Length: 383
Ligand code: COS
Image (tube, rainbow, N blue to C red; front, side):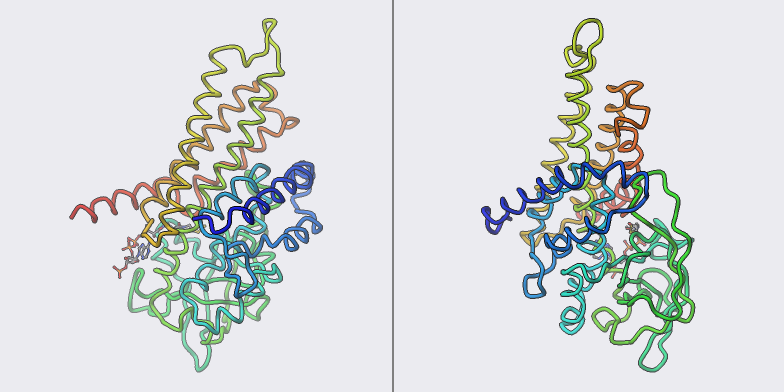
C-alpha cells in the first residue's frame, strides 16, 4: 500500500541522490577501513532513515511495507553495509517493541530509535542455538523488580554500536523450547554486559557483528516486552516474518546494482572486435539475471502488499527471502563470469559484491529454514 505517492516519490528521489552522490563514492573507503564514515551516519539520521518503519506518533516516517521495500530497492544499489547501519534499527531490533510492547515501552524507546539516537540490535542467535532458535539457553531469572540475564548471544549485527538490544531469553527453565522464552528490552552499556571481538567476516566490511555476553545483567522487569513471559519466541518469529521481506528487498536492490555494473561492462568491453554484450552467451547471462531479478521484485512487492492488508505472510516472507537471496547470489556469480578476470580482482568491485551477498542466504534464517517454514505451512494449511 502506498499512502501518498508524491511524498514517497520525493523520498525515493532523495534516497537515489544520496546513494549516487554519497554512498557509491564511499564504497571503497568503507571496504578498506571496515568503517562507515560518521558523516554518512549523521546524514542518514537527518534524512529520517532510522525511523522509516516507526509510527509518525513516535517521530518516524511510518512507511507501509510496500513503501519500505521500494525505499530498500533504491537504498541498496550500493554496498549492503550501508543498509546495515539502519537495518537492525528499522527492522528486527525495533519491531518487537512496536508489535508487542506496552504503550509505555513504545513511548520510552521508539522516539529515540526513530531519530537514530539509539541504534538497536536483535539478539536471538547463540553459540548453540542458530537455526534451532527455540533451544536458546540464555536465562532471565526474576529477582524483585528485575530480571537477571546470563548467557551469550552470537553474530549480533550492530551490537558494538547499539544502545538497545532486543534480547530473547528463557524465563521458564522448566519449559523447553519456544514456550519458555521471553523478550526483553536491554539498554547498553549496562553492568553485566560485555562484547566479544568484532567478527572478521567474508564480506560487508563496515557492518559489524560480535558476541554479546550477559553475566548477571540486571534488566528492569518493566522491560519485559508486553510485560508477558513466554511470548518472546512468537514476538521473534513475527519480527522475522517482516524482516525476511525486508532482506528480500535488500537482495533485489543489491542485485540490481550488480546487474547494472555487469551490463555496463559488457557494453564497453570489446573482444573479437565487438562489445561482449553482443555475444549470445553473454546475453543469456544478462537475460537470466534480469528475469530472476524481475521475479524477485514482483514477489517482494506482492508479499509487502499482502502484509499491508493485514494478512499472515509467514509463507510468502519465506518464499521471498529464499528466492531473492538465492537470486542475488546467482546474479553476483554471473556478474563475475561476465567480467571475467576483471570480476575476480578487486578493482571493479564485483568480487566485493560477490562476497557481500553471500550472507543473504544465511541470516534471518537460512535457505533451508525458509524451505522448512514454507513446507510446514503448506502442510498445516492443507490439513
Ligand atoms: N508468527 C507467530 N507465531 C509463530 C510463528 C510466526 N511466524 N512461527 C512460529 N510461531 C509460533 C508457533 O505457532 C508456536 O506457537 P504454539 O506453541 O503456541 O503453537 C511457537 O511459535 C513455536 O513454533 P514452532 O513449533 O514452529 O517452532 P520450531 O522450534 O519448530 O521452529 C523455526 C521454528 C525453525 C521456524 C524457527 O526456529 C526459525 O525461524 N529458525 C531460524 C531462526 C532465524 O531466522 N535465525 C536468524 C537469527 S536473526 S539474524
